[in-house]
Image (cartoon, rainbow, N blue to C red; front, side, top):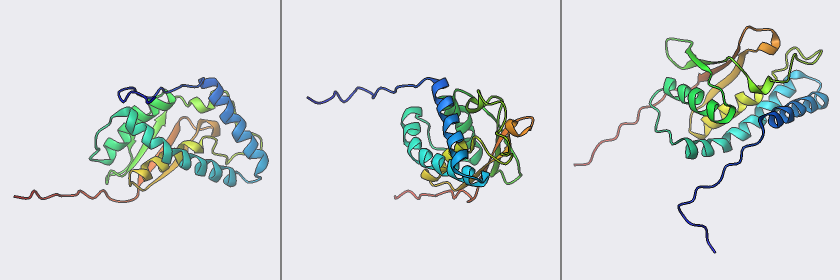
Length: 181
């Protein structure tokens, strides 16, 4: 017996607290496995990249967003749709340069650090939520946009805000199609 074609697949949500605690346990285990913070940061980024390359398909299917025509539009979609859909927050977006290829996502609340008061002792350069940078970078790469995504500021490091920087590396090429007459 086949499934009816008109039914949409059911999406199951997991408990947010369970996800946050599981992520914390993952980071704690990585801190035990790797001596250097840079290695933990790199592993979280690599892991996030793998998630992002797969998550973009789900995002495009569920969000029904149209084609974006500028980097600012892409960044707004990431902040207003993707972050809201997957993390339940909406970061604010700022443009950091005149060529309009560098943006910041400022998170008022970061759900991944809800149960974290401070970084572990001796781990001052640990980027606890580096998974998010990898997810954004992986998703952008799957839609053919190379980007450098890094944490610029983090409340866990004592900064006043949590800020993710996105720098688009290639200039968007506007494809011009000629109509055949």
